[in-house]
Amino acid sequence: MDLNLLTAAAVLALFVGGRSNIGVAAWLAPGLLLAAVAELAPWTGALVAAGVLAATAALAFRGQIPLPLPAYLALMAGGGLTGALPYLAHALAADTLPTPVAVLAFPLVFVALDAAGAASSPFGVWGSPALTQLTNKPLVQVAALGGSGAVTGLLGLSAAALGLALTDTSGVWPTVVAVAVVVVAAHLWGGVRLTRAPAGTSVRVAGLVEASTASSTDSALALLMQDERLDDAVWERVTSESTTVLPDLIARTEHALAGGAQLVVWAEGAGLVPAGQEDDVVAHVADLVRRHGGHVALALAVAHRDGPRHVDNRVVLVDPVGQVALDTRKARPVPGVEADHTIPGDGDLAWADTALGRIGVLVCFDLDLPRLSRQAGAHGVDILLVPASDWPAISPLHTEMAVLPAIANGCTVVRPTRWGRSAAIDPHGRFVATADHVGHAGATLWAQVPNRRVQTPYARLANRATAPDQRTDRTPRLGASRPM
Image: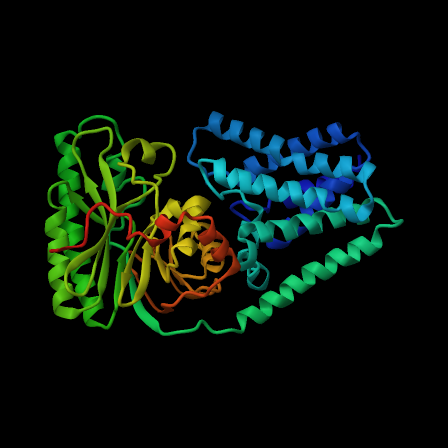
């Protein structure tokens, strides 16, 4: 075992996918680790790789996954063991198969594990190798062809080639050169794709975050995350914050509409309102849009006094004639405290046809789940609204993660974000505008965004994989379109 290569791989792995991600590290670390364990027996090398992957991931992802320490360490250990499978496959293939075939073992298992993890993990795509390349705009364009798996596949292919190049100087160079050509070609194709302007018209959007300066740990929303019936003090805090925040939020909504916004979107749960009063809030906003025009997506945190599910995390889209075009819940609350105390949705993306194009809604964490995010492509969504709420350890990464779904599904993503970075992202994954909520309470995201989707091979595949009745039915939502 080459300790120098092992040390280099471990150090670089600390900067792969976590809080201090460096994109180039993801190209080098796996290949160096492959070379470091190449002289060991396949199973022994895989166990060494598992230990390195588990230890470095535990450090790299600290604070990003909301789990108790024992559960977090168990998750990292399990991730290390499964993450070692591509290393085992590479070692077995290198011993038995011709080099041009053996080089495919690592990326094939790498991609398969990535896809299986994203589909089965309660945290979705978190930890995906593809997320390390979000700032590499030419490369991530391949997501239009095969989703995040295409990005992961190129990383895995490059790692296998690097591992071979560092351990065997005879007979591997034609394969290494061929892999280099593929990687360079992917970058060149992505660069050309980025020169294309999105087709169609654009709309002016405003993303609003409430002006409260309370942190994620001392807000009224945090007080709702308990099992018991809320006592008088907590309920008074909830109602007090509602009467403080909502009038300001509604006033800023009217200001945005009067200022030319065609679509106003609130951050996740910005409209904190006691149960029973939500229809009054929607009716008030409906009056505004009848006067000013435009569309408003109200992200409401409807508070229930009785537990354990105190929060109804809803998004209501009001159209220019004051009708509710869409009324949906967060499909998948974040596992843990939020899921325990939030009323779950029906598990599907909601969409509605409007004068601005087809508008879809997923709420924050929903976008991290491939089963939900690919529905944007399957349903032909033009503008995907993602009201969100983050915390320092995952910001701005969580916002940047919206780049891949935007490219893969060919849609614009508008993500107003509490306690994080708000952003509007075009169908090629480019940031049209950003605004930081942390340190700038009440900052408004203004952007002129494309409102016609870009067709992608990935979206076509998602559409074919969706049952015809699911593709053609009207929006899944809590209630039919209704006047307010």
